[in-house]
Length: 297
Ligand SMILES: C[S@@+](CC[C@H](N)C(=O)[O-])C[C@H]1O[C@@H](n2cnc3c(N)ncnc32)[C@H](O)[C@@H]1O
Image (tube, rainbow, N blue to C red):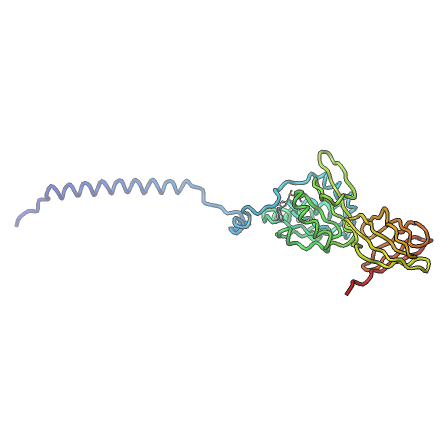
């Protein structure tokens, strides 16, 4: 029986194979050692992968908080009362509404596009024991209905205020207070302004809409009024007894109107309250009223 003698090439292959095996073993040990020292990945409890998509680049206004003394001044300027419904567009950490609920007993809705802000403000409201009064919702401020608010608070940007302005004037009830931190409303002149440290706060009272034709009755006479309106300023003409006179110093404060005019029996002050298509005179000794003329067919 002949003895098997390994060839040189077999021995070389064996040596190379053993070498590769040793290197692979070291490599495996090295990789395993690295895995053992690496901390296991921890996801935050509220982690939501969708946030990374939603959050990307969709802030119309950067997140900057209003200082607490400015918050207090805004709520005082708007004279927030218990049961007022306050809406904060771009509500950040919720501080304005939480203060309105705690200090003034108000209810509120805050909307913010950033889900992190909604989580934060919701937690803050819970910590402040006002969750039953305030709600925070992830929503675009441009898609948020504002018609139910008694008070609207804003800390946005000048151009965002201007984009919101037509909706405020059309959708909000006359008398609604709008308070803005630092930025005004362009040509819509503020009703109040105040400096608070380095900040400026503004307030507007949403005026009733009176533009158009009305029939005014006073002292048994009728007069035809044509109101023009620019925000809270009112002008126009009054025609009575064959004469037409200008309306002067006309002004709306929410639903309340006052103007000087001669409606056929001398120039006088008219003060009243706009109630939809009626104006009820409030001059105690000179009663008057007006009704909106039907639109021409
Ligand atoms: C200047 S911060 C004001 C925060 C808070 N209101 C305050 O005064 O402390 C503006 C907020 O608006 C939010 N925001 C930006 N664009 C928005 C949008 N399109 N809809 C809703 N919120 C938005 C931001 O996430 C930010 O929290």
